[in-house]
Image (cartoon, rainbow, N blue to C red; front, side, top):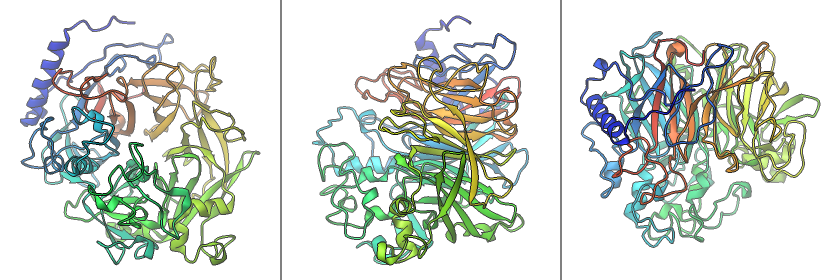
Length: 613
């Protein structure tokens, strides 16, 4: 183990600011040094690939030979002419031109489209939610200061950012200005497409046809489609609405009544943002909870909400193409005792004609998973008129089934899971991996969810054979989270380390699974991190840590850049649990005049080798 870096904090901060200004001035291609090199590094004793131990400090830690830099942080300019953030004078207008808050999913697309070894590309980044206590000085949880102007600023901090990036000489990537740069916010118009478009429950005073909605909220994970669009998942949208659900709504996915838990109609509602008040717009919540699709190559395009994939708290959109050409999308409903879903398109993917693929997600069959204790399982079709999904049971159309997907899945007897979050498909053997983060409320175990009071989660491997459209599968655990000695964790023999609370997933070209963690129990007293897990051979289930986050943060949205020599990920909610006025983190500026800022970073091997090796 090397000694901690002893450079004064003030010098580190000054060097960071100087380098960022240089990047923004357009000289990124000449930079050969990373912003940061590792503070700690732990080579494996057997001489193999390095693995960190769990970190505790307020700094990013990566192995020896790795480096990292910030691509964009909250408040950095995105659109041409955008200003740097003024923390004391934030407005919705300025925030709508700047990088949003709490970045989550990160997806890379090559420039130009189809380039095999791109030196330029697009990063599409989700902004899941706002944390007002980490945005505004003097934040008052009593909500006395929650003006409409402040809430509009928070709304503008949601959505997505599209960034042009280029490969730097040092092997990392940097943000550049470009015509594709774009901000999608909570006010950007979206089309509503698929079977639920126009349904009475989606009609509002502002949109009597039920086909256009302003904005996207709670965008968690996502994916890139084979035809070069981005899928972004609306998850905890219920936090934004207050009031009672109207007749015909799915009672299984109603509003919390308040994001800040201060009482009904005290959040985005009356006298502030009227469309979030169900007494004024009772149908507005039904216009959220979908998977949305964005074409980042066309900055003038209008993003779409794809209702054929069902309305749940979507965490993910694992996507693949079946042998017969149909597109398959897997998605987890991220809440305790919720379900795992799969969508199979009616139409087929055309690799030669991109335009033919742009509406493949508007017509198909949605399924929900039922796991058996003998290691088998089945996908149950959520199709109107079949089984219990009839008018007699409250489902008068396929649109009703999709809007109330949770209740429909209940009716079919799907298996309640321990918070199914990200789902990814291996590029090597086509197996499907599901991150089940935790479930402290479970009182009865079953085979796939084998622990009561499950604080540490598990990853499940699903094998559908050669047919991705199959309705039958086999399953097994890749790992059980937590320390083997203290929490009953289970890994491959000889695993260098362990993880807790798996969340986002990604694959590299060698079929290794990259896992970010979120919400480890406070008793662990370790920072969340990014891990690589072997999925094949004698080392299957072994875990190594590649990155440790900063205090209060989770790592989200890992994405391997082309060639696997670098990766992108988000550092979300650094300093969570503290405030602007008394922050527990100063990431990434380490400037006493600045609060912590969520950021997307790039990590790479300084020798140009494959990350994770």
